[in-house]
Length: 474
Image (cartoon, rainbow, N blue to C red; front, side):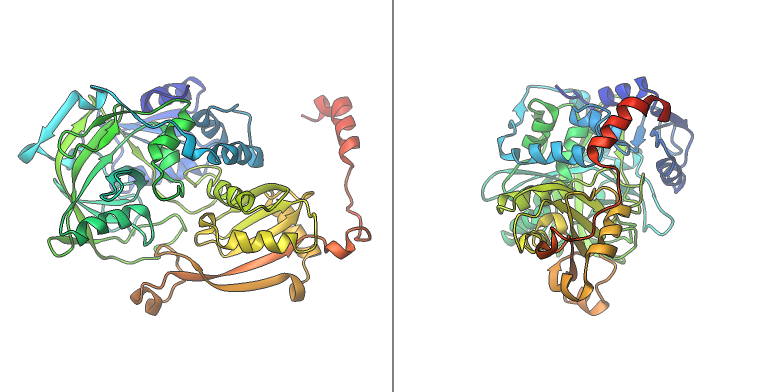
């Protein structure tokens, strides 16, 4: 089984020496700066902030939750020694069964109900929202999950969206075009209704992971979280919306997304996961908060986007590559050996070529995958190249790719507002597309037998050497 709640995970991380406690930090830039500096350290610690400036003692925030492969493996219930492509492979195999994840189990009561607030007493300002970066337009709850119910089919969507705090009962909401949460609230608006919503601030790592995925329409992320956690997520109905929320959540804010003609706010700018302020401030819908449930001494999650560099991602593995890997296999592309995403720009696929056109097939399928959202460069390499190792990938591009024959550009691939490249004119038209470069960096199939041999120790000699001399080389 996985973790009952966020607190249990924090205890485990503390027990292996990866937690640091910080008191007295300011949510106006200081918490964000500490979080980013810690994330850039070789062994990025998880941070637990208390006695936060402007907040009552006990109103805490945790950041850098899953920034190391060791902590990520803990959250997935895997060996803490699992790394790189093998970690992606385990995740990919599980992702192939997301429709089989156990549905949530409704219980009568849970810790999140220890405190209930409604009406005029509602004040979301008492929880530590943070101005994460210097050019942000205000304070944000970053990395929190929003629960909404599709009004047609009744399924629950659980996703992470941008939430800017404006006053004691008002948040602005930004969701990229095409994301499920936006499609759902627009359905309510078309009926002339506000969209009920519950926002969870602090929850199990499994739910955090599940809510970041590109799950198919109609798939509830609670089921995926249950699969990750090794058992169903326990939920309770919200006191006002009736939406099912995690029974062990730290804080739940309940309210509704009101139509733009009723109320709106200027949202942003906000430093996004591409590493840029790509979208400027604009008018976005608001969430009017009408009720709060929270645990005693709550711990909210702070997971701000940062530049996609080692240590600064939410996770040391970007699991969009697992989505892409599954898409390739579902389309019948054989012998995929590994997939890895480098930064926010390149996806590398390793395969064992079986026939002429095999690599080109993989490139075309990958270009249309939801896992390649915003990705501009897709590279296919042979099985002897580790897609996790950017130096090996670049070596393959430099020595096995003929630019005239092996590079193609396709246009109008799926992108979004956080992409820094769309022009002002494109943004005005809501034209969120980008070109994608497809690079075949495999040995030509017609030259596989006579292509120049690689200078490297054979796998057999490597294994013998490690057995005989490995202890001296550690």
